[in-house]
Length: 341
Image (cartoon, rainbow, N blue to C red):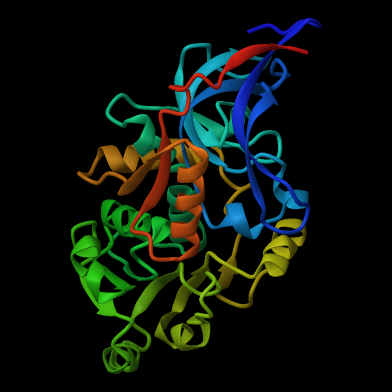
């Protein structure tokens, strides 16, 4: 796929059209990224998942092309990319150097891992941000150990459900999932040992009153997720003296402060950058944990069309998705074509 001065390869992609707000445009005439440089690979995208950060962070902070999660096949590589070669099936995270809602994306090799055969491209695309955030939140920041007790707030979303699965695979002895009653069976079948319905105010208050000092790790996937939830104050008393509270979401301004200045919330409280912290080692560890369990990502798939992209973000912004939304078969259309430059 070499480009010359006469002809360039074009592709479809979803673009942010404003620097500060969230306005999308489905474009079919974007030039395929240049040949990869040192430490980069060019990937032909098969599937891409979306995350709240895709609409929360503006173009000025998150790039022109929307999306960070992807799975696909390596088209070409630059220098110093390790063992990755053209033709490899890979999945990973792309930041400002590209964007995943595109037929091709340029990505740093350090944020790419080889996709195992037992995962489909759609399943692999659901892993990078949600599962890496859950892994780091539980293990690295939450200091969860085998036999530990874990509270997961907002347990039926992408990161919450990933946390239920990974906490189970890592050997937690007690995994309490907080979500709506309609998702009880979902969380209990994906690793949680107990369930609390946040829509039942009496049951929720009773749970908080009876579990003070009961948890080694609290992973809060709900606070600041967009609906005005704030579990921080009520959650902290539930920590053991050596416990850790980890929050995955924050308002956009606070999120940018953390990304730029590595700010913390306070003693035994952590909020971390779930995007730039993703590395190949995290992705490999996630695959290893899933391979030792019977868990797989819970996904809703949609075609890669303008109408379906809008529908996908509408569902995501409604904050009632179960698991992850993934766009599939992104190179099955005729939108990839040669045009005169």
